Amino acid sequence: MKTIFHPSNERGHANHGWLNAKHSFSFASYHDPNKVHFGMLRVLNDDIVAPGSGFGMHPHDNMEIITIPLKGTLEHRDSMGNIGTIQPNEIQAMSAGSGLMHSEYNHSKTEEINLLQIWVFPKLRNIEPRYEQKIFPESDKLDHFKTIVAPVKDEHIMWINQDAYFSLGKFTKDQAVEYTIQHKGNGAYIFVIEGEASIGTQKLEKRDAMGIWETDSVNLDIKQGTEVLIIEVPMN
Image (cartoon, rainbow, N blue to C red; front, side, top):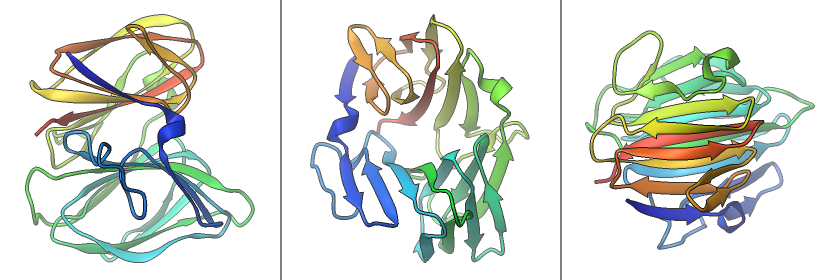
């Protein structure tokens, strides 16, 4: 088993006033040659967007983009004609494929929004662009890991154009949990959204992350009140 630890306080940081962003991997003006990607995981941005502000219409292609709101409501528009909002306990998945334009704004004029935006390299390039959003009730992820994104077409899971799996768990008590790698050869990037967990002797606190590969499973000791996101991706 191989591991890499990414503490929260070593993430890239950019404060544009309307946007306060933390970057787990090299992004925009932040570049760390040791943090370009983790396997097929290219971007994990932790964004706080001011009321009424956001990202204007801009292009993407050949990237799988997953958006997870943690607080507030995000307004989405794209060149495929999709217009809507997403909020906590909803997930947005978009295949940029052969190319699209989209915008993302804080829907509120008074409250900031906090969201995670995650980019994964696609398995197949130049596919037809696709947009999807789905509600995952909090009860679905209590005290276990619920798979929310997977390379399967199922009404209960968000589809992704990659052999990747996203799982969320929110834990109401101290417990030991085993996460089993779902696709042989994949690695797992474990990101603590809130709370505290340990993997072996390594403690992870809020927004810390740990990448693990060349293993079939990961054992976590999780503290009460902790929320964890696991992003499982091919390593090459």
